[in-house]
Length: 252
Ligand code: ZN
Ligand code: FE
Image 1 (cartoon, rainbow, N blue to C red):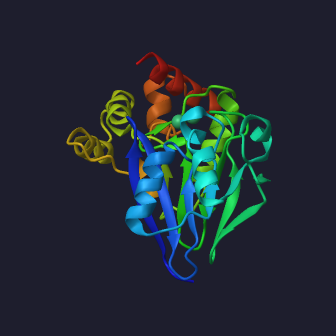
Image 2: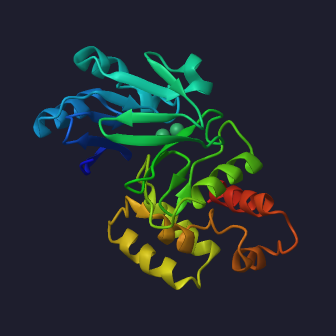
Image 3: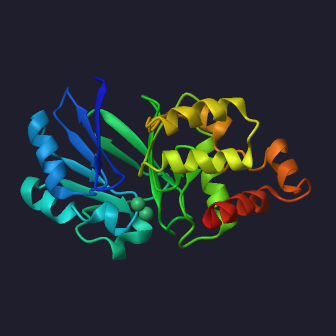
């Protein structure tokens, strides 16, 4: 198994595109398809031929490029079973317990509902990579558009349980605003202060080591004593503390 090469770039304002290339076989996957024309140009510049698109959820900014890329390359499109009726062009649907193979690399599918009800993440345990779409962001988390607080908390807890050295690849660069909000929740967190300074200097901190998220992301830390204390929610279930942090971010 050769190393997976990852080419990352931004489409539009803040949508991350990730192209994964397996040099042994030439297999190349795009995580979501935020901009078909841009992704096609980047593929050409690399000399890579697209073989797969791995879709995380049905939102327009993640699926808009699927049709053009599929027409141009004949690539195989894989996406969440629970959203198959909302995503055109899927060749295969997957859910937790399934895996997806790209060349010599295997991705385990994780159900991470909350942002949307069928949202999934792709985890390469061998290389320690997780492509988490709009569930977890650097120092932030996705808006809960279709699910509820307990559901999103369960999904984030699942991701938080991956090995701490896992590199997390998120769907958007919201890092600077996430860092500013995180500081309002935990102003005394020194690791957060360091990362927030980097973010304010323009470093997106993507990908992000899960261990660094566990140390700085207020949504993953919602149930920890300092945040419970700051919110006066010592006795509450973890998902409720998380819910309060999420509501504050919605109003921020
Ligand atoms: Zn989304
Ligand atoms: Fe999105």
